[in-house]
Image 1 (cartoon, rainbow, N blue to C red):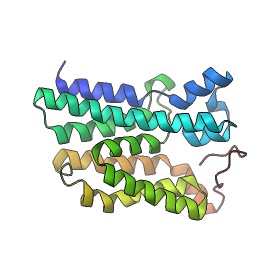
Image 2: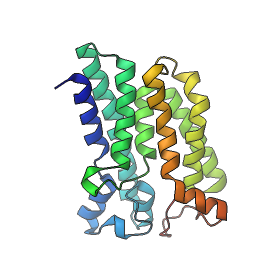
Image 3: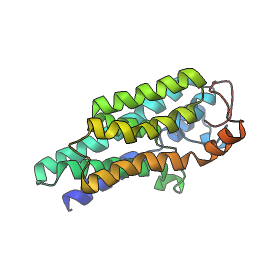
Image 4: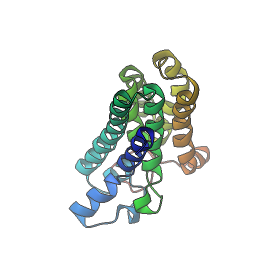
Amino acid sequence: MNPTALALVLAYLLGSLPTGYLLVLVFHRTDIRAVGSGNIGATNVARSGSKALGIATLLIDLAKGYAAVAIARLIATHSGADVNQLTALAALVAIAGHVFPVWLRFRGGKGVATALGVFLALSPIAALCLLAAFALVFALTRIVSISSILACAAFFYIGPHFMHGVLTGTARAALYAIPILIILKHHQNISRLLRGVEPRFTTARKEDA
């Protein structure tokens, strides 16, 4: 198989692993899509009543994003492909896999934890800055969605400062597509935020974040 195609197929398959769905199904014999918001991400898993599974979902979703980029870098290094371009494309495809997993009829999560994973692999400094932005907004609001949205928006300022090596041509387009995709995936949250009815985070609630 062509090295680029191989890296992107692996990135999609890693990203599409429906972590929250599988963990809740295995440990609670419940379909997380029928609980709370119906989202398979860490927030809804935690709100379903299991903080431990929520944390596990977060960490595994992060790890699969990191692994997708790490594998793409390894393939590019050994095949002579453009490392920056292939890793950026793999990052986008991994998140697309999480958001549109073939295993769940293309209805997945919102990609925030997976995005953190890919940015940790691409630029740890940029990832930590984005995490700090998320943490600051969350500390002030206790609303996961607005924290995620503003952290994504912050990438457009943070990225050029810490990711000069990959922000060129196709790589630039792929990386900027990531926060745009995640923000678009939060369209229902944005609607609730505008109406002033978006819930604050608590594991005792069932609404989406």
